[in-house]
Length: 406
Image (cartoon, rainbow, N blue to C red; front, side, top):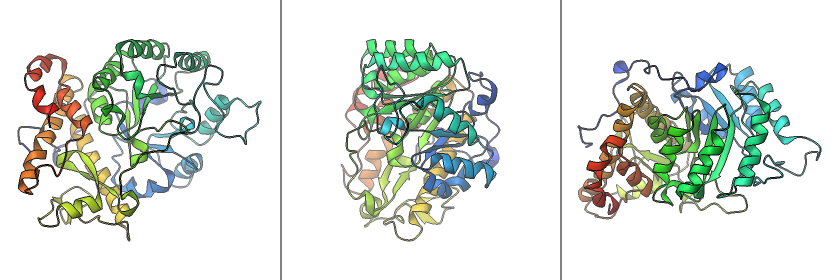
């Protein structure tokens, strides 16, 4: 069981509208303020729409046919919630000083302006705001970053979302973080930060989580997209909005030309969110680990207390859709709890306590299953558990060693 001292998602009847927060966005973009959207491929939208919290979430479409799906959602399915399209040019091309917004393919005309064309196409599909088709920003490539910022600043349009797909190496050292902050502060509109790196980018550098929180705090209008747990951590820290990837591929960026590293057995079963451990596991993995013990029964809005976490052992039938619905239902419960709290320290403290409770749960569950190293705490969760709100940082250092060894 989860430690009752940590605030947890409450029954729907106990939830109220989110408290008012300072507005960092203007005009039509205000609808995005304080939301956690879901970043999803067009083919999987149907898996999760029923669980989407209309008042606190929305959609970011990413990948092939994203524009067509946006048009279908607006014109045929009457989807009225916040809707963004991520051009995701960074998946195939890197930014450069000469071409910060590169052509995504060789099929386009050389004289077309990729930035102007992309913004116009997105607006025509009815998006809440258009996102820039920025190329991948390699670590400390300040020339490419400055070129991209100059182009967007010249538009003088605060309703354009500047996509900043940066390699997580930007968050490694103090100097590069300061440079990134200085560049992003030159833009008056929203900045959608996305992190690049294999598997779990924020686990690669010890100070990355702290530096991410600093960027969110010091750059007004910063959003964090295409991410995982960091969507909640950034929102608690005051991000304008965030987007949680609805699939493992959409929770980080792999640099152009690199082959994505994936978990073994990925094609055989869906990823399933284990709420108490705050991590995703393959359904087959959970089924194997609970083979000799009763798996936890999930009470989320999708599982309704009748489905156990070991019931997603393959992709057969509708298991992929059911797993996706389960994942989103859990995320929406966390989001409702977080946004029902007052912005600022209260939200940060709740998120910190939630992460620490999850870290503490790992050894207890392993002991119950009589396998000490069965479930391992993911590095990013450990770092969020150590990243206390500023006025609580000193007491935390006393037991930081325990969390590093988890």
